[in-house]
Amino acid sequence: IKLGGVCWGIFPSLQAGWLASSESFFNVDFIDYLKLTAGIDWSGNDNISNSAAFCYHQNVQYSSKMMGLVIGNIENQSIQWETTRRVNAGLDLHAFNNRLRLTGNFFHNVTNNLLTLKKLDPLAGLDYVWSNGGALQNTGAYVNANVRVLNAKNWKWEVGASVGTYKNVVTELPDQTVFQSEKDGALRGYTSEIYDGTILTAVGHPAGVFFGYKTDGVFATTAEAYDAEKGDWRLYTEDVNTGVLTPFEAGDVKFVDQNGDGKINESDRIIIGNPNPDIYGNINSNLTYKNFSLSATFNYSLGNDVYNYQRSLLESGSS
Image (cartoon, rainbow, N blue to C red; front, side, top):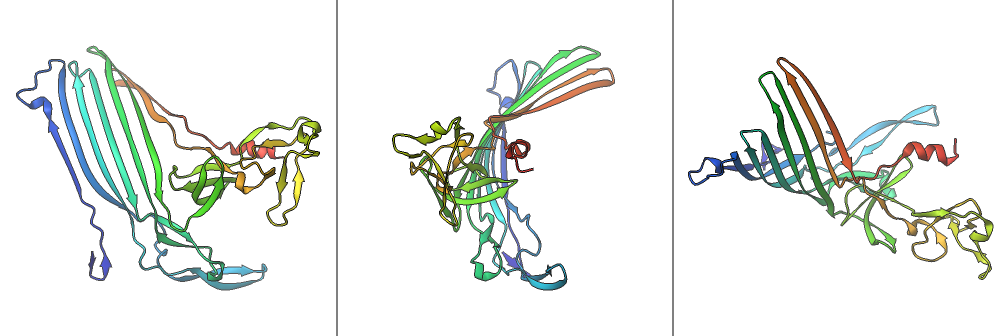
């Protein structure tokens, strides 16, 4: 709503809980406490520069000698915050004289009006401008358990563990670029270059997946790289600017030709990795003797791909 010449966001929240263990009909001896919860809430995110909606100029240095002013941003007064709607349901259970505590939660988040950098025509003089567009979903669940293994007068030992999982999917993006690949069909989204690696955010896929060329070993010999029956090289690289073809020879990495045209170029790129884990969580322990305690926590993440930037530097041969 607009009030006093300023836009105000309203983000309501409603949470409800039912303490089932306090009901008269509840008669499970080993359960000390059972509470069921559910709720829905909205939240906003405006974590971008305060000047993102305004037009301004900035200093630049020309030819290492002179300073000048250029346009730094284009005004967009209609820009607003992202909005996330979250639905959740969970339980909290204590059992066996409170020796076991179990907590579980399920959530489904939908984010709309994503704050995105919209690509501009080169005539604008800027590469991007902040705007609202796109949507994504996050669905997941986690469970946490704590067990009091030892409960003596002076000694107490508690061990716990948690496990969680989520699925992140981009459902909508503005001004998409279409990337063709035989394996994934038409991928529609954006790419970003980070530490010489390409990151893809595309509709129908998790945000920020790794995008590149799949490898299939190395051409060990010239005979392996050259098709004697056809009288031609098996694979070529294609210069995107000149169209010049360079054959793969002995010692070159063998890339998978996704569309079978004998040329390795941008159309052969596919999704080659996902940074999101299959499961994540922690394992913790807390040992207490009178007024002294010793605790440890181990965090884990399994199933996610990691970009080995150090290896890319060591094996590139560029320095």
